[in-house]
Length: 319
Image (tube, rainbow, N blue to C red):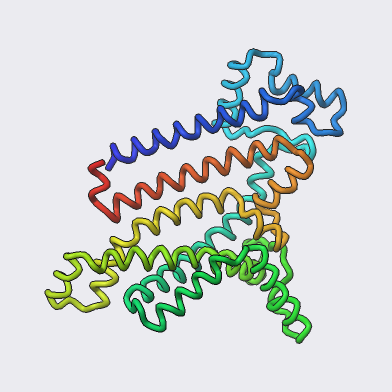
């Protein structure tokens, strides 16, 4: 297991190194005037000189790259001259919002998607199977922004007009300030993401469970007189979760990197909305920092997925 973890960690570090090379070339080599690009369109000559001195742009390219990687490893992702603060502080302020959204939605879509998929597979061909498949196809085809707007219209606007203002129109309240208000503001974003992504997990779990339930060891477990619920959950679901875990790791890593559409629809200043605002302002240091952070989140998520493989399927440890 240790060798397995070390090898996956090495591959993850290699991917991050390649990403830093690409990002460095994109932001520090390609522009004709790197300092002006990083300082912003309204930067004064003094600010541009400050950027040049801070980044050491008069140094050779290899020296600039090594400084860039060393700073990133020490948590220095640059300085935002638009807001006059380090990029790390901007990410730290936005990260709890995105993590709250991603983790809460992940719990909902896993419970909903895996449960629906198991029921659909166990009752294959029944009315429940067809109903759950239709549910999955409907929300799988639903754009996230459209579902979010529909939920806002019916559960915020119409309920408020009817005198039941339970759901807020958007925004974010920190959990440490008021847990109840935090929950109220998170419910609609959670449901928006969970319904769209649960559709994928319903279809994925159903297909995987149908394959597993036809295996010989499942028939052997049934012939031993084990309860059907134990056969399905303990013997069937564990083996069927491998592709589900793969998809979960990818989705969760991307969500932590920034849920752009959902955060924009519900006016939540998380990483996704922060990135969109930075793109609109051409605020390159913030874009650069979020790209690096999101890449690291995806790599770490995939390493955790590999570890989950080893726990779900012992054969993985041999490869």
